[in-house]
Amino acid sequence: MKNFSATKLYALAFGIFLGLCIWKFGNPVILDRKISAPATLSKFLNDPWPPHWANWILLPLAAIGAIFIFEKKFSWTQTKWLWLLPLAWLSWQFCSATQTVDTDLTRATLWQFSGCVVCYFFGALIFARDKLWRWLLPGLLAAFAFCLVRGIDQRVFEFPQSYQMLVEGQRDGWTNFPPEVVAEMKNENSIITTNGVDMTNPAILEKLKKGRVAGTLVYPNALAGIILLLWPLALTLAFDTTRKMKLPIRFAAIALTIFLGGAAFFWSSSKLGWLIGIAIVGLFLLRLQWPKKIKLTAVAIFLILGLGVFAVRFHNYFAAGATSLGARFDYWRAATQTTAANPVFGTGPGTFQRPYARIKSSEAEMARLTHNDYLEQFSDSGVAGGIFYAAWILTALTTMSRRVWNFGSPLDFAIFAGLLGWFIQGLGEFGLYIPALAWTAFTLLGCVLDLPRNQIDKSVVAN
Image (tube, rainbow, N blue to C red; front, side, top):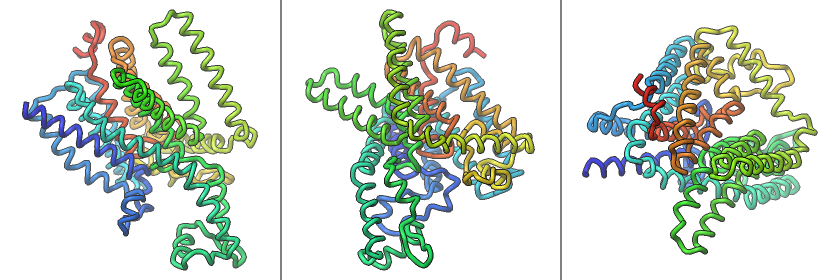
């Protein structure tokens, strides 16, 4: 009983750590040198922390987790491919690192990838046992709620106030700001000097005017990623755990969960996120215990409505030429070209920006990551690295889909749906390189693997 209580405490602490990642480690690890350590208490609380700090917090947690695994003699209960593939992928990253074109970028990325694999195995070997993953949820969902509130605050208060402040500052010649604040704004490139005149950076004003929110993460699409990952779980908990509560309290809990996630997701203005969200809702509808014709009709109606709202919501984006989509095509072309030039080891984990700077289209903006987690594995670590990663994720999702659909509880299915959405988003984003997203996702991925298996699955596990 004592050891069991200790594992619960450990799961609770690990969930708090994942929540801390959402709060403070929402930037890609390759930006580590760009993020300064906070110099004041205010910045310590309000600003993101350097990503490498997360490694030093994970290390002692990993050591404690390893002790639990050896003491309780936890064994792998899944098909051998679900432990061979992640180890093969990570091992190949270290092989690729020997040929890297940028040691600093690769070092940061190897720490990140090692954290992904550690979180995955801890999820499968520790937190999946006796539903210990439920003890992850308090810290994880509290931070998720804070992230959503932060995003809504950005849209309703912070962005409008900042926009007005910058417009008035430029109009008054920045005399309404202390000199040290003006100097800091120049250093941060919020104020630029053109023809001897200090003016607000037009890109900053445009960003504030658009009002796309990011919460505590690096940019709006990353916020959409954490919502895709955790909102299905939060909604399921809101509906299921409040059944015995008084109706007003239950209604308030459900309404608040819907509002926070829905408003933040809407204001993130993530096009890919919106399409994935429509597909995930359709998946939930298909699992309902309704007659088949009614389910298919409901799915068709929802798809039509969802795509209609999508067309109206983003018509200006497509009318303007869908510039971000065009940019992604250039990233993907460059990644393919880099893979062809370096098929064995790639250019080194996390180094896409180095070859891209040389081969990008002249009109394209510079990018640090490929905006496709799968394609970047090929570009950065060669064909073997890309195959190992894609095979791992495909095998894990296929295994989960069979078990969750037939045997999983509503919470199991919600976690699976969130993971499916997040891994699909990886086709157009770089969540694998963000601790807040990747470490959370891989922990949950390991947790959901240990579900009841039917007779067909037993023959697979026996391998």
